Length: 378
Image 1 (tube, rainbow, N blue to C red):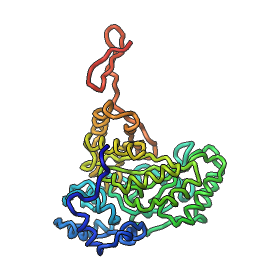
Image 2: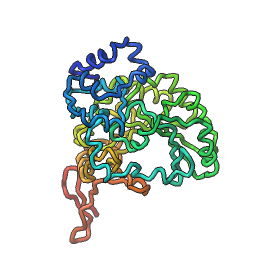
Image 3: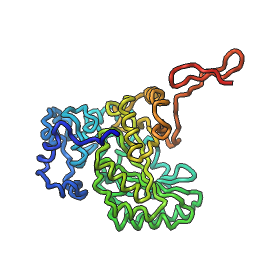
Image 4: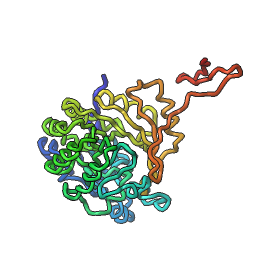
């Protein structure tokens, strides 16, 4: 069985740790230390990795529009001192974020329109999304909620979410509540516990799904005790967001293992990102690695047309071609569903390469196998 990815095989980890003040192992392993020492200056990254920056004339405007924040741990996953590194592309600002902003929407999925009360998005009949905070441990540069970065950090209190709880009580058709953000697992534990308790107490709610990227960017958060406290409000599922095999470190896999041992199933939603994971070999390594970590690859999303992230988008046909290449070469457990989120709140559409080729002259159906053979089926 392949070994988990180790951070910085080229020795960059030491440079990052030294730039952070050479923390002791117990500090590096403390999730609070990681947050307190979050890196917010791209020039700091350039200096630590001995990379040319050369973007000074754009940095102020870029950072005031789309700020930077990354945990030292996540930055330590950089595999090479190159701005094209898949980790750097996901966490360090790029001037491309400011281009073509007028051609995209800050809220392409119309979440604000579908918000009947503050903090709640209700689009599908049987589920609702609870937005608890705009605080994240790391600002993912492809984030579809980048519109919230320009405001001051906020965290909803239980009191401010009372209208949302009342709405959930009144709409018995809502069977699943997705607790999202920002990252809800950064909430103070007293707030998080009360929030989960309130949702759990609603008779019609059968499942709580927590959307979090902390297994990827801050796995230190997942102590056994914390995972057990989350599981107490079950059935609880975790939906996380690994995008590249370099993120599957020993620490990340151990965090997922603790969640699983506490009885919390994990699914993963990957975004197809240009220059990060838009190759079949990268996706194959990611999806099989997730499966070994007991994380089900759930969705591969086509990038949303969000302002500040257009440079990450591939064509839909690229995603279909990648899925066609992976289909038949990965087990069904390892193969996610390729999907797009339609603009203006029209919801998700599942896409997949069709195997249907047509009908033969004698009426037999024709299908294309994963080996590219045309097969008759009667």
